[in-house]
Length: 100
Image (cartoon, rainbow, N blue to C red):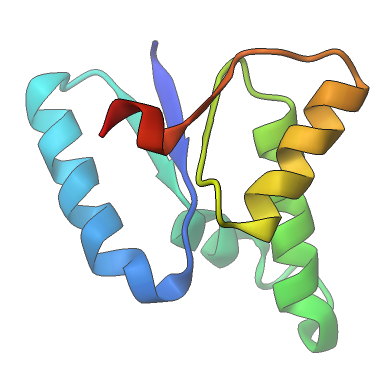
């Protein structure tokens, strides 16, 4: 595993930053891309009026095309990704609560 993308609601940004710092201490060569970095990169390239929706769709597409996907069961966003992966016969997802 050389790259990881972490996605979460903006209210979870402090937790995601702490998780990123922790993971990079364990594996310094791991490249971690956070949702906020995707947002910063995309802000000037997307329509401002629909930015949040477009950003969510980009994130869902990245999650869909990933080798592994760890999802949160109560999340409709995660459910959409899991259903899309199942419809395309893409496997490799695990519910995050399986690891708690």
